Length: 459
Image (cartoon, rainbow, N blue to C red; front, side, top):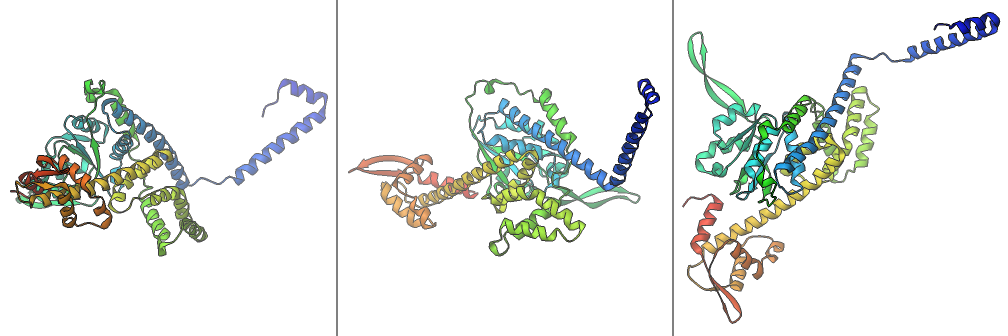
């Protein structure tokens, strides 16, 4: 510490000031030495952990920012249900990280004609990781390129046909990590050419769209979203300039910057969640407070247990929210990756996507019940005698006896429901009123044809 000319003059005039100044300097030096001695030397592990935290924080900011940007871009070109945008945005972000998860759901857009499904798929192919928009998919293209692509398959009506059996089998397996297929490949050796088995991984993100619907087994691997026609004058007139859109390029580049960051804590999160689930549901009544107490007890063992406990506590809010939802089984398996991505984007986004997922699953359950009831009604009508007048009341009572369901669902079947179902399925050939009662002649051949289509049976 240097002395100014003014201070030097003062020290000459008053030696006590120089002595006081020297004492202050000595105190400052001792203080600095003490601080240095108390400071813990940063190890390589500490440095790496600090760097990891910095990268994670940066990734969280980037993912959150691009989550909203993707929604904005979707709203610019597509007129969808409001609660569909968060699902699609998170799914799109997840295509950059899908290899970190054990499963990744397919997206299926069941769309009416002119609803913009092709536009949506094309847009997503530019926003996603290595997106490929295809109107036809072969078995070879799927297994040879799945490991490095995100597929967007349009016009997939034929995917349920007999000649697509092999492709359908690969798609049924490809939503889960570890699924693979072996094919013989010709290779050159010193002795000439020979055929050797080569393994191809099938796991990859896929979005599909069609008008007619999806075969049941494949549909069970999908998050199903229904698209309707838009009457938005602006959206219906926009040019799809996705390839040259600078905002899309920025989103893609921005997310690519952080796609190496682990959203699952290098897969440790999976074990932690499994431990949480086992503890929470042990003996059917284990509470979250008990789980926390067990974590506290384990906390006093050793350093490795301490780290595990700290991580468990770190993710406990996430685990609580997932397990407090109504989702379980296959639907939880499908939505769980989106929950992890949402957690990385922010708790508000996590809360929103859990709420939306419960609505989507509830709607799907209602659709499945309605679909099963409709199929049974088609079968019932296909067994009737053609050309006969029958009352709605008689048909309702006979269908109740024919339909195999629980009492609660049987109570939902009444004259009003049957009349609307016949109209919706366009199965009434003629209709009349006799003494105040509605009588109809049913289209038996059409019911038989539709029933065979639903069951996948050829004529």
